[in-house]
Amino acid sequence: MVGFNYGTQMSVVPTSWQVVNLLKTQHITSIRLYEANDELMHALAGTGVEVSIGVPNTQLLSVGQSNSSARNWVNRNVIPFLPKTNITSIVVGEEVFTAMPNAALVLLPALNNLYSALEAIKLHKQIKLSTTISPAVILDSFPPSQAFFNKSLNGLMLPLFNFLMQTGSYLMLNVDTYSIYKISSNVISLDYALFKPLSSAEEAVDTNTLLTYTNLFDAVLDSAFYALHRLNFSKLLLVVSATGWPSHSSSPDDPEATTDNASTYNSNLIARIVNNTGTPKHPRMPIDTFIQELFSEDLRAGSAISRQYGLFNATTLLPNYLLHLAGSGQLLSNDTTNHLYCVAKPGIDDDMLQVALDWACGIGKANCSAIQPGMLCYEPDTVANHASYAFDAYYQANGGNSDSCTFEGAAILTTTNPSKFLLNSHSMAI
Image 1: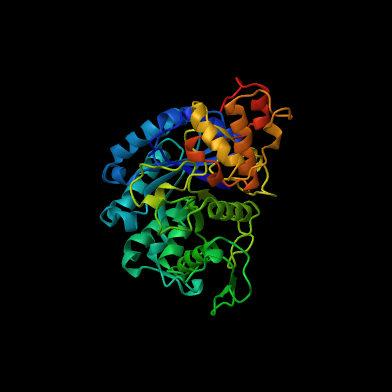
Image 2: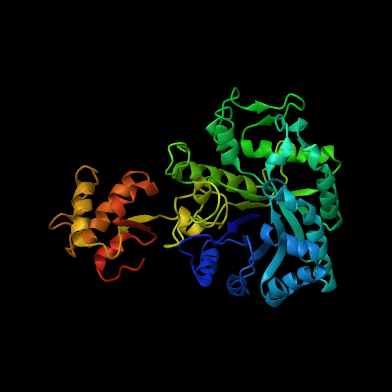
């Protein structure tokens, strides 16, 4: 299963119906909400999309200290939407052991209280309860076979793992590959982090097991598997609660945050998950994975780079970059593997468009012969239509890279062929 995380900490928040329509269009069948969203939950009714709801860290104390608060949370955020909305899990807390260690003491009580609330209404088998952890709680993580959980946390983690096993649930791991790569200070190669092909000399070998690792994602997962095995929890399933790659950055410290790298990482990741590639320790094992994330959250707390993981633009609902998903079925098939086009942005004045048009056909070396007088795409003779043709000619000539569809804010990506715009200058609907 490939799912997508969805948060609303952004300047422009799409309507719930726009989000649901995007999920349908892109054949996305699983979504994880960082916190309950009544309007979106209603909009998801009848779609069949699997929905995971988050209990934010700020609500842990309330839910963990009071059975009645837990019941109220379930009454407010679960019951009103069943059975039409397909709620499959509740994620209680986000990286509590590292993000809010003082709240770790109430994590298990919160899980128990919510479980009791679900059990009272006979939903405890239908809706799983879990929490997310950071790879930072796993020490000595390479080679993976020698990894172990931070022993100072065992007093809290062991009861947590027992709860997850006894309730038939799973542990959720945030695999922040980009951050792990950056922290390594070039010890980890970019190609290794992006799932790119490596020479045998570049591959990493676990000297204890002789298993070969060709990418960072597998190594992080196997370190978690081995750490669980060390505590006798080999049968506890893992779900990747977040992983992805930022597509751009304004900081010179993040040159690897590009649309090409984001496309490479997520395309290769999705192919592995869809094809049940598994890891060296567990080949062919299905690993449910949530990708970070549906839209970039520009108001999200934390580092600037953490706000640049969105696959889609929240304003236009168009992809921020193309993915290459041959063999991955219908997932993300419509607007990411089908052609994107670069056209004149509605509302831009003709003077600005003319400057951009002249640049594209001149310095940009776009092939603009078709919009010359008497040629096929000359009519209708408007700056907007000629600019749309020229912008797209430049964009396609540069490999469909979204960075080549800016023109100082005069252009925008669309899934509609610009030739259609040239047929009717009033038909532009982006």
